[in-house]
Image (cartoon, rainbow, N blue to C red; front, side, top):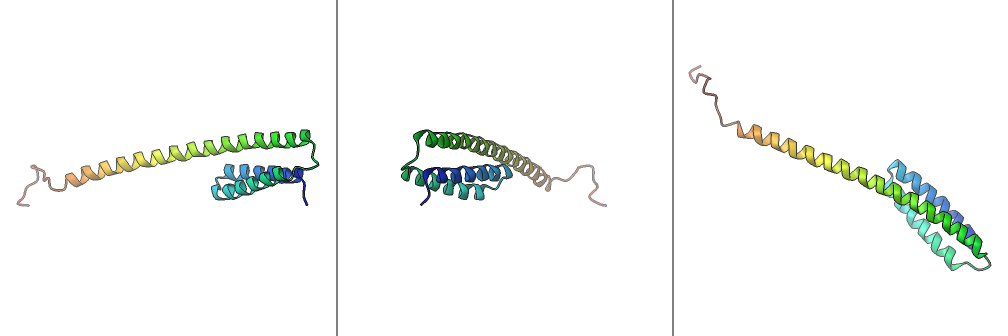
Length: 117
């Protein structure tokens, strides 16, 4: 049976991989790693027998710091995606405005063109 510190070490390692996945833009992999990391953290807190409180606090502090970096990276990725979506929306509006202007001009004939040929 593994101890709390082993579970926390594995959770920290998964957290580092999760951070790398977020930096690479692989959100699905980051989500899987986050779920696994959460499960390991819960197991660590369930099996905390025979572990010094100081060692446990040190590992949890490291995990909290890593969580802060993960959250920061996720917010950066979210902001980037939001900016991209707004840019695409503006381009779509611009293109639809051009389409409306072109479609409106189909029925208009210039008065300077001779109809006789």
